[in-house]
Image (tube, rainbow, N blue to C red):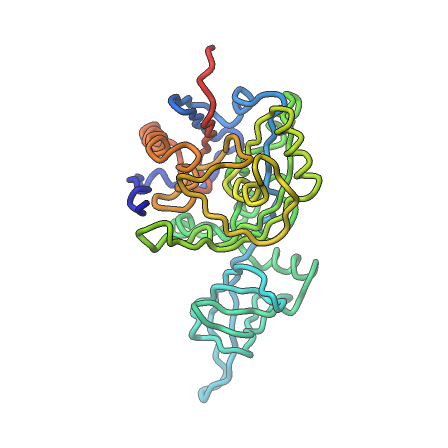
Length: 355
């Protein structure tokens, strides 16, 4: 498989920079093996059945983008440099790995002051990153970061506008619980309480799992032969209760439908031959065409970047030619793409129902 096999032309004006309001008013493209329907997210119940189970990623996005000052004495007196830092993931030593710009203006041992309450010491740097040791931890760190930080919008949105206060709510799911992600599980952004309540009343069940989405989700594939690409590992957990719920649904004949590629990658990491076991730890699973899905029956997801690992994943689920045809339809019909864009419901084994 070549990287060029997963390319398509996307008009610039199809990249969404703000979400639909209300959340569930976003459009929903529903696709089976040989059929497509245009709907809205609030229509989701039309395509789900009692006994189906949606798997939700309950990670919470941290406001990982920080701006601060590095102070230093020079021959001309005190000088300061503006430093931008984007937190990537916790470091095993207790600090945070971060993208720091400009990296050349900080040295190990120097302090960056981000706010009256929050500062960090540069512990190490290399490979375009730094390890930052913050002055706070636990709930105190979370509170100070919430005040000083901005949401880490994807590069294709950040290039068009800066993050603002609205993003602190817009770029977070309504069920976000466990802090640690630096990118949102974006398919989940389409759900609001009325939709969740309506689905529950219909007999659709929900299971929560956790995958802390890392900045690696935006890294481009740099090899032409995609078999040589290596995924960035992300930490996840499937609890005993979650595994039991998913297995019970499979046994009863219900469908397992992850909301988002992050939830899908996690449950597939934990699955073996049609069942799922508790899981806790990193996963770097890379799903490409030819992969045999172990537990996933369908997927709700947004529309993904050309030449991306996520486009390869949905191609594995639906078939490469089929998913490119689905994307052609989405472009022709004016669907909005990427993190704040519209959604798709991919039903690879579902024949179109008669109305």
